[in-house]
Image 1 (cartoon, rainbow, N blue to C red):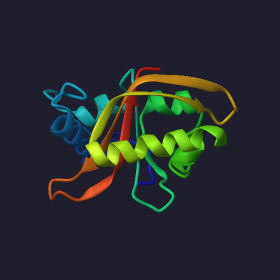
Image 2: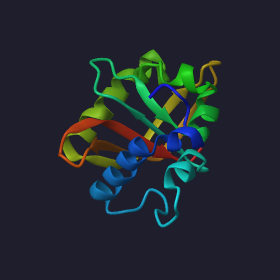
Image 3: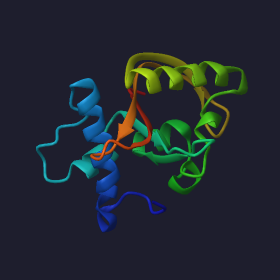
Amino acid sequence: MKQQPCSENGYLHEHADLLISSYQRLTGKKLIDNHGSNVAKALFEADFVVVSHGIESDPIFNYGNKSALTAFELNWLDFIALPSRKSAKPMDRHERQDLLSRVTQFGFIDDYRGLRISSTGRTFWIENATVWNLIDNNGAFRGQAAMFKP
């Protein structure tokens, strides 16, 4: 998943489907209206932030929609090379790890609040964020995702 979501790659529809289906399965809510013909494009262009990271020992972001790229002040290639822990200042990383452990245990949380940092050093709060596990159709754990309003 190196190329930014676009029409040529179907806006990474397989990963978007994983984000959308995992969210709905765990929360009972829709992440985005999935009645349209191109929900992957709608997710990438949504007015809320959606990010995800993989299952590496030091997880790396593998998706960020346009709102996420704007919030973190990064282009696509730099974003998907960023270890997700670096989205928080070092003093906030312990809190972030506690959050991820709670999500792993319960499947999702919808009350997260935390301080984040952009690539330029600008800090911003995320509030009432939903963080959830990414589980594929075979039941395999594929990472974690978060959604919040900027």
